[in-house]
Length: 419
Image (tube, rainbow, N blue to C red):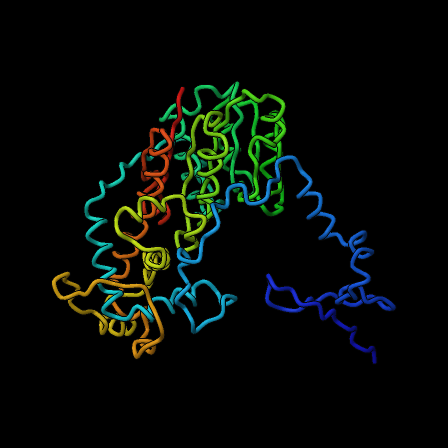
């Protein structure tokens, strides 16, 4: 009988499990090490060597776009005593809502809805759909998911051209932020044959499938977190200090959108010709990194209220698979109450836990109202980011670049600098 091989017991925090590799006989390489062995271990540790190489790159500048640190009075979670700071963000936000109480959360929802009604609806510009990859004659050979991605990529590129960010393509460097596999950059190269220089930036490594389509370009693929990305440090811009650049992205997640906007506005306002960032995952925004603080404060929102606005954006896409009249719908409907402003007290910063800590904030409103409030919250965050671009002197606009049935995350804020 062959004995089972021992498995490595090293814990992987990002996967929330232990390593499953077999332990090589006679070796124990994945383990905790003694303090006096750390320096020697650094010489052979692949993860440390990769991290050191990233930090030594000329385009790395720690927290250059992360936003200013918060003082104690601006900490949205200063009043949350029930959970440690190491608790997941979603859990801390739920605790904020519980400490605010049902009446306070309804008051916040009412203010959000009232402000959202004053915002102009985004224009719809669905462009270049004839250039999107179409399914071939053989049905089923291209997944619908891929066709949807192609439609989004084509429309984003079309909207960049519509606001005249592609006019200087032979001279400018184009920087895809949060590039992933680089398919949006590939779509740009197909639409814009004058494109010469493309920089792909992402914090993770990917299979470089799209790179094969881009071999004719001056292509640079960089691995860096966007909060640490010093745009003028990348080679095409470092070699030509007066060269201008255009930043673009598809579904840049949460705070990464703010990192990208800050790169174009605060890092290199004169060199940035413009930005076109298709947003995603508003629930992953945070007060420290958020670029639209001034807009929220001007409209009377406190930092902890912004965290709840960000949390409630997740409601915009909740429950779409639940049929009307189902058991879940009935349960959700039990929390629906009059949200009229006349009967609502003003919300105040949460303090100690009270009797309201037992109620579930998710059940405050029925499903249809939660979806509407989630959309309102997303609209507020988009409006605040537009205000940030306009305050920097850019010509800014927000458009819906595809239909909602193609993607629920279908908004594209863009800003254009001086020609």
